[in-house]
Image (tube, rainbow, N blue to C red):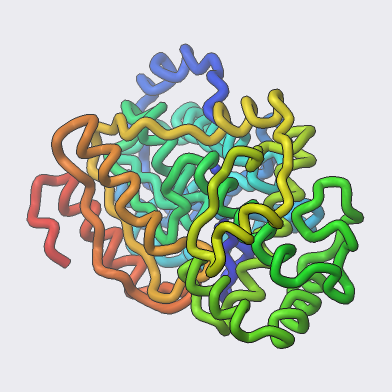
Length: 375
């Protein structure tokens, strides 16, 4: 989902690439710490990247994965370091960051681009002694997918405020949020007459949608509270959640080249008079190719064999509490041992303090080295 904090926008695929040469590349010489800090920036297969190596490099690498970036967001050249990179650099780690070749819910590009950058790092700087994945929001999902697909190259992963469920579930919930709003607030001022879920409606900016949604919600507080309860968000964050859902769905429609979700057979519950709701809610037919793209590009299996640490925020309006046990259950089913889920920290979406990020990361590195996981 989208990550909005004082850090950049963050709130999901697995198209196979031929990285057969990566194993040979990993035989590169052992890394040598530079006498001074170094920065490499450039573009790999359309994806801007940045690699920072501190002067006191410990020989280990952190692949830092950012979250959802709305299509059209300006990108600075060269890529800036971002807010989290200095935390790891100060601890002695090299940091590699890809901006991904495309924006939006670009999890398939993110998976490929991050692996391409890792292989490039090995060729240029030598194989790191250890390598970790650290992802935020959508990047948290990409960290899981990378650990599943390219786990041989990593020693563990940390997913913070991650969308850690298969994308088909995410977009089912996104569509539910939008059609429910359209049902309770039809023809809301400032919004498309066909509803905000309508894939044929005119494209609106996220801020415009949030303002119009917020104004509409205030006209029926009972319905607004019902929507908030169903979405597992606080009433005050509801307009923001719906605005993000609108943006994510419509940008995925453009990416998948069709409606990626089908709710014609969905039996909804939890909306008061559910019989009336199911009769009156708008139904959409999914485009088969778009649905296939979403299923392939955003799948998860739970097949990991390296340490994984998950941590979420309190009152996260984009990652509902019902998502949190999903991936641990998948891993438990696959291997009989679930990843470590730390207690929630921080407020909102990806609202972690720097010390909380590093505390979670230190928990991961202790697990990797066979130490206690207590933090």
